[in-house]
Length: 101
Image 1 (cartoon, rainbow, N blue to C red):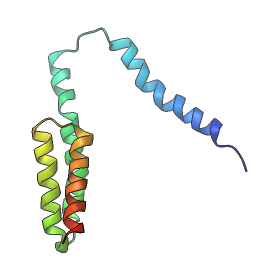
Image 2: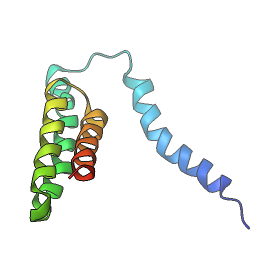
Image 3: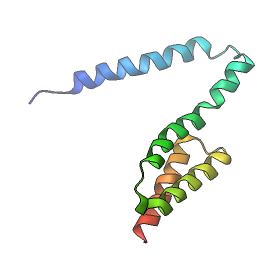
Image 4: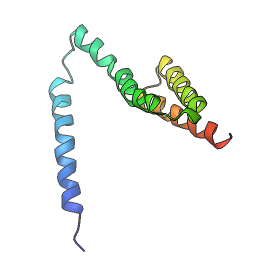
């Protein structure tokens, strides 16, 4: 059996490096207001991209669960819950609704 540790470490370096470098270079520089406003919308657009495809492809039998997931994600996003918490809230809402139907 071959070890996957070198591959995992290489992937760590490849993915962590591009995230660390901008942080180190831009950490103390103020962002222009337009770029700051643009970056603030990324979680909401990512959430929309994640949910819209699922909503459009949802079977008709899951309409209530789909609406519950959308409502949970929208409510969580409205109160600035962030991307991860909004998606998690939608998943939990759909899971609970489908479990207790």
